[in-house]
Image 1 (cartoon, helix red, strand yellow):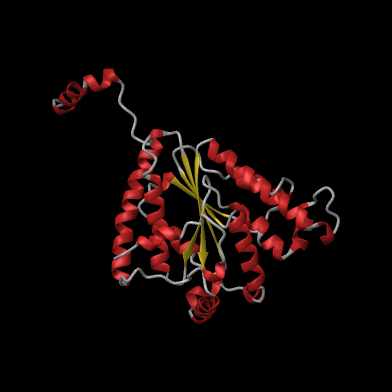
Image 2 (tube, one colour):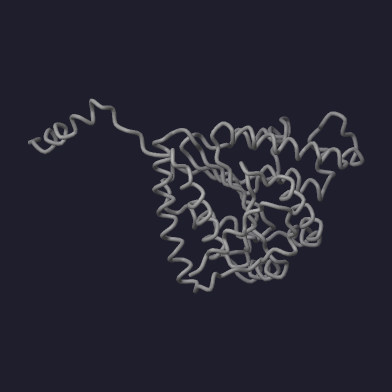
Amino acid sequence: MNTSKINTFKITDRVKLADCSTYEDFGASDKDLKKRLREIREELGDFQDTLYAHGKYSVLVCLQGMDTAGKDSLIREVFKDFNVRGVVVHSFKVPTELERKHDYLWRHYIALPARGKFGVFNRTHYENVLVTRVHPEYILGEQLPNVNSVDDVNEDFWDKRFDQINDFERHIAENGTIIFKFFLNLSKEEQRQRLLRRLALQRKNWKFSPGDLEERKLWKEYQFCYEDALNRTSKPHAPWYVIPADNKKAARLSVATILLKELKKYKDITEPELEAKIKANLEAYKNQLQNEE
């Protein structure tokens, strides 16, 4: 299996989504893809234990993508071997009444992972420059000063919001949060097929909403907003990765591989040394336990 192509998924220059692949299988069978994922996620689970013991970093994994892109199943499969206390998943839906009484980043700040833990944002703070940009009327519900009509939600408004998001990520990165941002790049045809499967399979009917079809009509608008967001906010401290998402198994492997490879670069994340006094008496402690009646 040749997964070297994963190295090209990171955005380091301006990107056009139309030029990015939506399908990848790395020349491997589904069985081989699943086997390799199992190996990597075990290593990730071990790394999380070390991250917790080290206690100076946290890891934030941001997942974005169109409806049916596979975010939920990716989370389930990639983090399956983690200690359940070591990873916290937040799915951001329509803001609650309480959340609307705060600035749009507040609910994301309070959901950030503690040191030693992984946090996964299933949909993220980027919804505030994606769905709200496609539907600018939603901004009026935020009750912002100097925003009295949709006409006030202009390009200057979005420029400021992108600056705020970049500042937010820079701040948390400088304070020990390692940030990964993954855009699951799904083709329109694959989304159509997945929506049809939701309708065909009774156990998946609950996932379907007529609103999915209305949003699908705005595919081009969403692609423009995603592309603009990716280009404006992929930074060395908070990079974006465009993951081909038509093949779910390969997408999961891609995300897991990137996480493990990049996290291994942090050579300072190691298990702490025992205190010298305890270390010097390990044999005595062992003998004490072995000699218990």
